[in-house]
Image 1 (cartoon, rainbow, N blue to C red):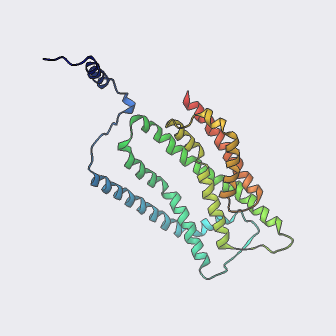
Image 2 (cartoon, helix red, strand yellow):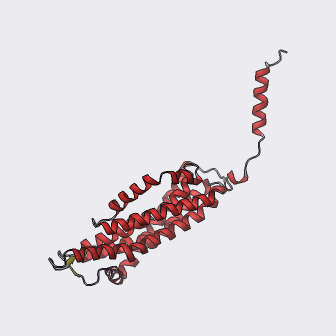
Image 3 (cartoon, rainbow, N blue to C red):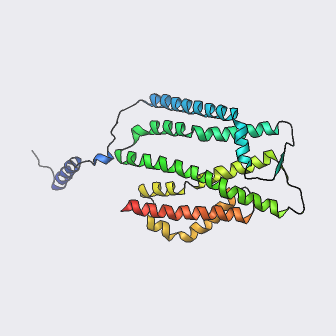
Length: 262
């Protein structure tokens, strides 16, 4: 029998050695269960259905108490008289307020359904990151809403009131006002997700904390652009406040990434 060449024998031995290497337990799938493709689709349909039910329940519940919500959102515009300039304008404002509020209230259920759908495909290492990321993202979003409500919206409104106080009487359309503040609230909440995105990029090995620091000039420029794009008003004070918050969140995220790298 003709012996195998030396090079082929080495290749076979190398393959056998690599197959016996130990696997890191953190990279294993603890619930590795094979599921047919159509079962995945059925589960996705069920998760979406549960999420939609939660959204509908949240919107209907908020619509039942929409008047207190409207009064709460009118507080930053102290001294301003609101007008209904067209039939049904306040009704559609009520629907928008109930819709945004219901979406916020139902977000925990939506997050839960998303987590339950993707959880079987996550390794132990990835599952360890899931809870802090979800918790941090929720806290930052709520922090963005509070920041916009207490600082950004009053600053923008005061700018517009004082700018034309000696020329025009302040009678505002209620629909335009709520379009302004709802957009500002939710754009600020989304902007506050920057540290979460930084942590994800770091854990995926895409960007390090040092690389984030090296791009500080670009970050400053982008924060000013982001402040101008996300704020529905054109006043420099509101844009500067949001840009400053974005910068603080970014460098805070760099510090968090640096701590987790150790």
